[in-house]
Length: 137
Length: 137
Image (cartoon, rainbow over all chains, first blue to last red; front, top):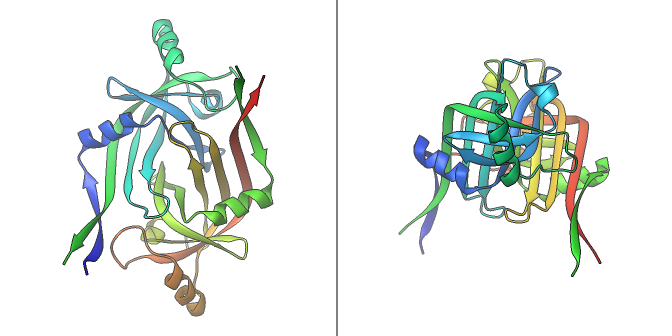
């Protein structure tokens, strides 16, 4: 019978960004009232940056930008095999009107309501890992 | 043809904790070096508290406990329908030797290595929501 072992390996940055771009939602991680906070949002990856829409912009983002973390993953709920990508970087409001229109066309806000803003997160740190299973005899 | 609308609704605390207990992994959200951080971990819910194992204990937790946030969800990657539960509370090392042994028996650390500690997070805030679809004619 084959013995199975699980192997956690780090992924290169490019591979990590490609995985992030392959999925359409993730989790914005930020500080709110000095407490760690997390919120599900939809995203796209455009020109190396993560673009999201959130109603949190006004409370989360300073006018000069705020460092946030963003995570997306695809994990099998039973085996736990899969990948997770975590980026950290400066989040800023997207202010260019053409960009806003373009992003709003492809990005649906997670909840209901139209009070959302488009946010661009430029990755400064990119960390990805994969949990895979190897069979050995 | 039926028009479909998506409905985001808040879940009661008890329902939220039951959903959290129904899944076996989630995301620990904390501050590290003054930056927002997130890490996948396995969990169980025991006596109303979330129990995790992590190698981060020494860097994340102050001796008197640290406020962290914990999130788990089950979201369909295509429709985005599903639920998310977010708790915030004080995280403390589990020090009772019998508890540690009991928890280590049922909780597998996410990665490789045995440098992990067992952590108990007592929920102070519990927020759960469900994104569901309603069809109407």
